[in-house]
Length: 276
Ligand SMILES: O=C(O)CCC(=O)C(=O)O
Image 1: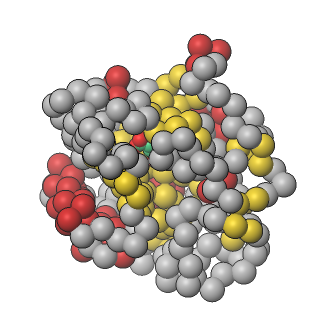
Image 2 (image 1 turned 120 degrees about the vertical axis):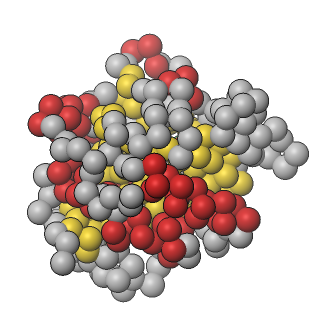
Image 3 (image 1 turned 90 degrees about the vertical axis):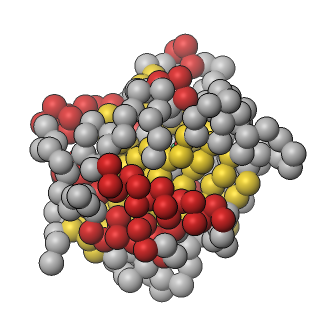
């Protein structure tokens, strides 16, 4: 069953944990049929990637760290997920939003044997988006043991800091995008012992909801068994505005026609909540 609403109510305690920590595990919200539908879109995309694809494993390297965006614009299952799935209701509830627009999707696959980490970062500095209601659903398409789950620094979304974005590929070159708020990102891997880190084991149908300013990073997937396919979707509440940026935003979505200060509402970022 492709559920349109979450399979169970989201509790006040889960919303409070999100507000406090910036990331929370939400168990059992998606029917397994959604995972199959998305997995089909993912396999199609891997065979025929989009124009923003990134291969983050060096040529000839073990495993494969594959990243792509905007599957929902090309593959029917991902489109249905964005427009008809329970994500809109989840995002509205978690962000306390009256209205939600779909921003984009971000596929992150780590094939078995992938050593590369996802570097520490937070998402909103990559986007030309200002506002507080910026949230993601990180939905794995494979069961995720805790030791390869994304890790979040609890409370980091409240720091009021914006770290300069970096590419995920080896060496982590910075994107050439500027904003007065940006500062170089500290070496959170070296100082991980100084923070409260959150990560979980996830079963099929579970997801993590996290804030656009929550600092996170992820281990590789070094085990020879088990893929780690994650379908992340980005959702914006009514306070999100198109922000002035110069340089390389990511993903580089253009053709929307928005100007600085505009609500993030247009056919490329469609209104998905409330439902018609
Ligand atoms: O899945 C990962 O390795 C990282 C996910 C991530 O960085 C994101 O969804 O923003």
